[in-house]
Amino acid sequence: MKKFLVFSLILLALTHSTAQAQHKVSDSLVKDLPCNNITSNEIYRRMSPQQFSSQYHIPIANWGVEVRGGLYELGVCWGLSRAQRLFFYLNRWNSDPSIKGPDTVQILNMLREEGTYAMMLNQESYPRTDYGVLGNLMDGAAFKSGSKNTHRNFRSEIERYEIERFHKIGKNLKLIIGSGDRSKNANRTTRDQLIRNLQINKLTLIIVRAKRRAQHVLLVKHYQKLDNGDIRFSVYDSNYPQQDNFFTYRQSDSSFYAPNIIYGVVPSKDINDAVGVYIVDEKERDPIESTLVRYYSSLCRSLKKP
Image (cartoon, rainbow, N blue to C red; front, side):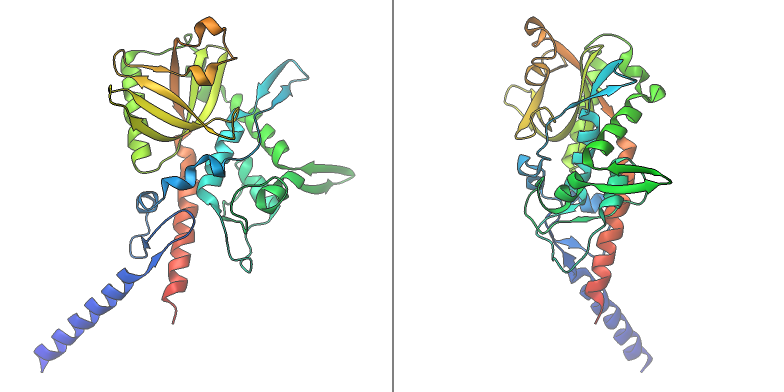
C-alpha cells in the first residue's frame, strides 16, 4: 500500500511537471518561450532576429539640437539609438486592442530613463508617426506646473536624454582621448564582445569614432562572417532610418571600417580610414530584461489559471 502511494505521488508530480513544461508563449518578439524557464537569457534565445529588421525602425531621421544657448549643436543619435533598442524589445505588434498598455506619460518617462518600464502594446504592425504608440508620443502630453504650461513629446524627450547623456564626462572620457582608431587588441576585444552579444540577440549600442570630434552612436543588430574572414555588422543608423547600415571588422589588420557611416562627416579622402568602435551602456539592458521577465512571467501565470 505504501509503495503504491509513493508511486502515485511520483506519477502525479511528474504529470504536473510535464503539464507546466507544455505551457509556452509566443508573440511578435519570441517564439515558444517555455513557461518553466522564464529567464532573460532564455527570452533572448527565443527572440526572432526578423523582429529587428528595418521595417520596425523608428521612421524619424536624426536631427540637431542647440546646446547652451547655441554654443554648439548635438545630433540626437544617442537618444534615438537607445529609443530604438527600447522599441525593439518592449513593443508588441498586432496586440489585442482590449488590453491596455502604458499611457503616453509613462513611455515618455522611459525615453528619459525615468520610472518603471512597461511593454508597449500596438494594434498596428509597424511604427507610424501618425498612429498608435509612436503617434501618441509624437503628439505628447501637456502639463501645468503652477502658472507654467509645459509640453513633452517624443522629440523633447529624445533631446533631453541626448544632452544629459552627452555631458556625463566620467562615462565619456575614453571617447575624447586619442583621435580615431584604437589598438588592435582593443579592436579584437570589441569584436569578440559584439559577437557574444549578438549570438543571443543582445542588441548593442556603440560609438563609431572617425575623429575626436566626429562620433556617431549606432545600434548593432546582426553580424555575418564573410568568406575572407572579415565580419560585417548590420546596424540601425538614425541618419538612415529607412534601411540597415553596416560597418566591417577586417581580419587582416584587426581594424574596423565604416565608410558608409562616416560619409559626409569627415573629408572624403578619410572615409576609408580605420575607425574606433566603443561599446557603451551595457547596463541599460537591465531594466529592459527585468520588464521582459516580469511580463512573460505574468503571461504564463494567466495561462495556468483554470
